[in-house]
Length: 409
Image 1 (spheres, one colour):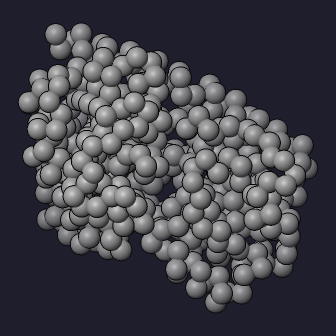
Image 2 (tube, rainbow, N blue to C red):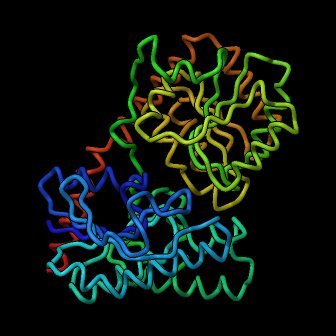
């Protein structure tokens, strides 16, 4: 198959689409990628890139076409809107000129924004190729939940756009089963919607570290609860820090935060204000390749989200990464993500925005024997292999695409 991948984010930005695209390429399919100039998550163009390019790049033998966009900057509402719209507009205009070959499939990847589908719709017309749209985030629900848009009139406009996109897509892949009713409600055809979960990059797996590994020296001594990922409003660091306050007398329980984001400065200030410097540690951002090494020297892996209906429908992609690394999970989330952790028997769940319940979950795991914690991790790894293993999902995705191509001929 000749596949055109359209994604606002791509290598060297760290997103699951990188691994999936590389996997398809290794299977003998020919992929080209239409994307933007890398600037996530810091909001600045990566070193060696600028608004003007380079326009072409390569990754794992894939040809990458980059369109100019306005970077995320400080991530405020205006700047993000400009970032989203600039990619959608520039990609829609330039795609027919940059991507001149014939394609069998247009594969659009949407962690957010949904406007990434607009250049896909343009290319569907130009190339007469069907669109597979892999949804990671629900619009307009996520906009109202995060406060990105509060105007009812603006949300109605977005809803009309969403309906147009669903109508134009030949197959919509939902990363969470709980997404499907909402997609249908917004005009998606039930016969063209399919549950297709995230996997985890192949680097996420149980590993071992030598005694002198750098990660060991960076981690505090004691029981280590590790959060890895974006430090933003959705991740509810109010809840994490409140739980850490409740467990402050337990000096050997440590909260280790790997990552950065819009709320990093606030979190650092709150750590000092609440007197948590001895037990809450902001280690900063590390490359994805380092995460399994940090996870190896952790005792529990933490995932949190705010208490919003949209977040209860979502499965945070870090859950798959955590499961793959065979470590027990503490999940302070509602809905579909919590269901997976419970079903896997891979950890302890508690309601979102309940700091008392979160502190009790950490304490419960802390008081468990290492053997019981290890058993949780092994169950999580088994669940990952049964439900989220990349090669199995790749087989399924290839079959779905081939059926779509045959149907369109």
